[in-house]
Amino acid sequence: MIGKLGQTSRRYRDDARSATSRRLVIGATGVLTALLTVIQIAAMPAGPTPVRHPLAQGSVWDSVYTAAQAARGEATFRKTCAACHGDSLKGIDDAPPLTGTEFHKSWDGNSLSAIFTKINNDMPSDNPGTLSKPQVAEVVAFILQYNAYPAGKADLAASADSLGGIKFLPKP
Ligand code: HEC
Image (cartoon, rainbow, N blue to C red; front, side, top):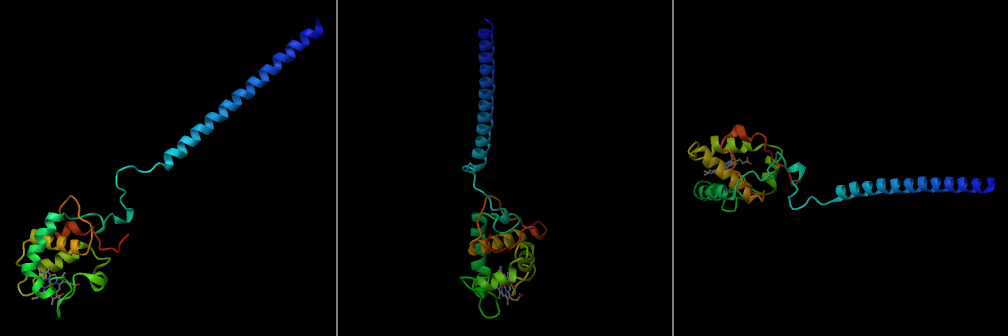
């Protein structure tokens, strides 16, 4: 009788112990599953939204003009600037290039407000001050497009003050 009772309670204790360890296993599996889910979410690709390069922000790489604006600027450039700066913007005699290594050397690190002001105040050098501010912005947009900076959905602002935060920078 006593022996049987002892066996029963030992079996009961064994059952209880294995239940505890089973619960531990289930608990560990749960934690592991949660961890894997977190890792999976972290590793998921960003989806169809294009990832903006963080260094593009605040620079000419941040799609700061529209193609339509650049097209209007090209018309003005061909009529008003190309005689001195060249059809392919490479510069002629005293008129410096508006594309290529030399152009980037003089403008990288400068803001668009500097080139806007330069064109607005001094160009065309044979007839300065004849372009309206929107026309200056259009010509700047054309110069950006010609130098392969990306177009975007909003026009470049037609005032030097609004362009101080946009810098010429080498490709990020
Ligand atoms: C009659 C010739 C002539 C015409 C037309 C002309 N430019 Fe110029 N441009 C020059 C000369 C010369 C310089 C260099 C002297 C200076 O910086 O003022 C210059 C300088 C510049 C610069 C500064 C370049 C740099 O890297 O320093 C820009 C930008 C520019 N021109 C844009 C234009 C635009 C845009 C037009 C048309 C709206 C235009 N120019 C029309 C002769 C001309």
